[in-house]
Image (cartoon, rainbow, N blue to C red; front, side, top):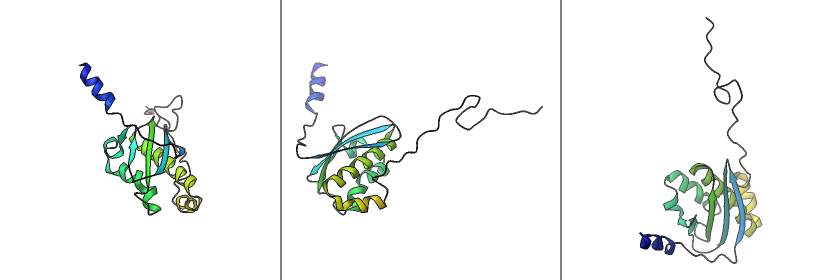
Length: 145
């Protein structure tokens, strides 16, 4: 049992991100802390490769979208810590954070990313439940007689 725990600790990846730009991305309840630096195109999420962390191809495609828009898919390395929400919210938070960090690297990219609405925080969230109702808008079944 002890050997297994030691193996898990040794698998933790140490990454050098001293000359990097930092940005925070948010979506729904998810918060992504993103460090971006010049590199070879590796993306790490919570210590794992993004392809291992996210199962859905849709989420993987969403995360690489900012790099595809600027035609530099392998010029930057990303380290990201994400918490809160589900996989879709976390992927959206990462996109927001990566886009903000790219703008810190090069201000000329701002117009490209802004037209695709990647820099703007998506403020949509779950509507709260109201009293006297089943959900936010759904009422209980009404019977006249």
